[in-house]
Structure formats: C-alpha cells, structure tokens
Length: 71
Image (cartoon, rainbow, N blue to C red; front, side, top):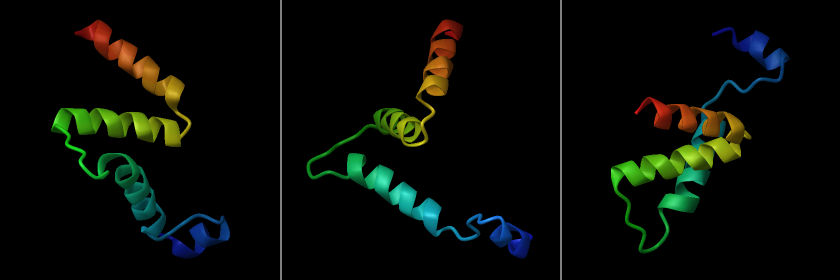
C-alpha cells in the first residue's frame, strides 16, 4: 500500500475502524443476553444492519427483490 499517499488524502490505513464497526454492528444486535440465532437468521440480520449503517438501504432492497424474482 501507498501509506503516505493515503494519509495525505485523509484515508484510514489501519484496521481499527473496520474492527470497531464490526464490533458495534454485531455486538449491538447479535450478542444480546439470551439471544439465539441460526446462521441464516444471523446473516440476514447482519445484512440489514450493514445496509442501514452504510445508508445503502435502497441498494439492499433492490438486490433482495432481484433475488426473490430469480428464485
């Protein structure tokens, strides 16, 4: 990676931001006391949480509609 170039543009070069986001999204929803999830249910919930956190809800719904029509 070109760390100097990325730093000049104000871009993150460490994994801390990603790790914190994952901990926040996963921890707040999936690791509540008494929560039990199937793998399919956990993946679906994380997809929704990530779409909302990244303001990509419309893209997510377009993809979801496309998936249901293909099945």
